[in-house]
Image (cartoon, rainbow, N blue to C red):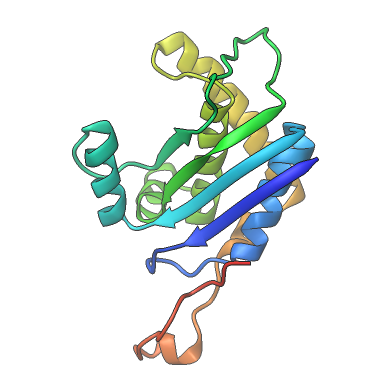
Amino acid sequence: MKLELSLQNQQRIRAIKVRRLREIVRSLLAEQLQFTEVELNIVLVSARRMAQVNEQFLRHEGSTDVITFDYLESRHIRRSAGPQPSRLCGELLVCVEEAVTQAEVFQTSWPAEVVRYIVHGVLHLCGEDDQTPAARRIMKRRENRLVRRLEQKFSFAALARKPAARQAAGASAGGCWARKR
């Protein structure tokens, strides 16, 4: 399997263990979805940055949870009975602030929401659609199944990184919360 996975943390709302998130994404792509070729960039962003991208590319106002950019020239259209594409090439922007807000609404954790948004974005790259109620139900069932499988293997809570003592005391962080590998 050829796996080119870039994960960037460009937000400071929550400290996150990027290395651990990378393990979860690798499991999703290789074990759960069994892709043979992947080029994927995932960027964790603030609500402000997400709103800018949402307006610029989708002409929608405000922030959203995940935005998916599919970079394959011929888009693989997946139907419920159709084959899973073997190649994936794209970019996901994931809004951590939205994850924090939605975690309160759905009584879950923000790391679980971040994983859910990544799964949702990857399903869009697979050709899944959520534009109609029927398609949304199919996609949501698949999303839930994949999130449950990942949750059985990984502790999503372990994604949350505790801030350093000086950060917790209110001192300047002086850099990134997580390193890109």
